Amino acid sequence: MANAKAWFEAARLRTLPLSVSGILVGSFYAFSQGMVNWSIFGFALLTTLGLQILSNFANDYGDGVKGTDNENRIGPQRAIQSGAITVKAMKKGIILTSLLTLGAAIALIYLSFGKDNLVYSLFFFFLGLAAIAAAIKYTVGKSAYGYRGLGDLFVFIFFGLVSVLGCYFLFSKELDILILLPAISIGLLSVAVLNLNNMRDQVSDAMSGKNTLVVKLGAKRAKIYHYFIILTALFLTLLFAILYNFKPVQYLFLLAYIPFLLHIKTVSKNTVPRELDPELKKVALGTFLLSVLLSIVLQF
Image 1 (cartoon, one colour):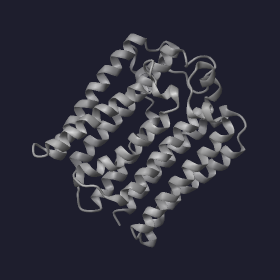
Image 2 (image 1 turned 180 degrees about the vertical axis):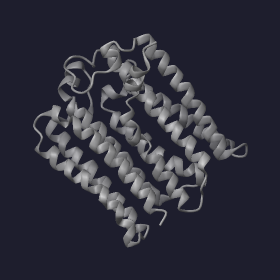
Image 3 (image 1 turned 45 degrees about the vertical axis):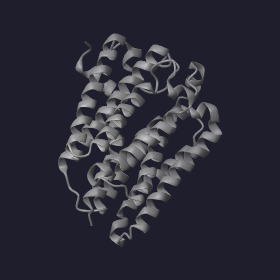
C-alpha cells in the first residue's frame, strides 16, 4: 500500500468543502423550520464526503488507466500517473470507500426513516447506490459518461438536486418547492467548478479522447456557458431570498457574490487555459462560503 500522504493527496481534500455545500443548505433550511436532528446532519455529511472521496479515487483510476493523465495535462500530478499508488491498490481503495460510503448511507436512511417508511427507505437506498455508481462511472469503464460530455448533468443532479432536496427530505419527509431554487444554484455552481476544470484541460482532454462538454462546445462557447451557469445560480439564490421574505440583515449572504463576480472578470480576460487553475479553488470555496452564509442567515 502507498503511504498515507499519497492517499490524502488522491482524496483531494480541497474538493471536500464544495461537496458539503448542498448538505449545509438542505439541513439548515430544515433547521430553520424547527426540524433539528444532528445525527441526520452528521451522517449526511459523512455520506457526501465518502461520495466525493470515492469520486476522486475513481477519477484518478479512470483517467490513469486510460492515459488521460499524461505529460500534457495541466494541474497537479495524480497518484496513478505519478506511480505513488498502483492501479491494484487504487482499485482496492475504491471498493473500500464504496462499502464505507454505503454503510454511512444505510445508517443515514435508518436514522431518518426508521422501520416505518419502507418505501422511502428503499428509494433512498437505491438513490445511494446510484450515487456510488455515478461517482465511479464518471471516468471508469468503456461507457464512462465523463468522456461523453455528460459530467455536467450528473454533477448538477447529485451535487445540487439530490444533495439539497434529498437532504431536506430526510428531515422533513416532504418536498418544499421553494428550496428547489438554492438546490439548482448549488448544482450550477458545482457544474461551474467542473466546467472550469474542463476549460483548463481542454487541449489535453481532446488529445486523449475525453469529449467533455468544453471539448464539444469549444473555448469561446464554453466561456459563455460558464458565465450563464454562474449568473443564473446567483440570480436564483437572490430570488429565493426575495420569495422567502428575507429581512435586510439576512442579505448578508450577498457578500459571497463578490468572489464570483471577480472570477467572471478573470475568466473573460483569460487567454491561457493553464492560468485558470487557481480559479478552481476560488469557485469551490466561493460556493462553500455562499452555502455557509445562506445557512447562517436562514436561522435569523
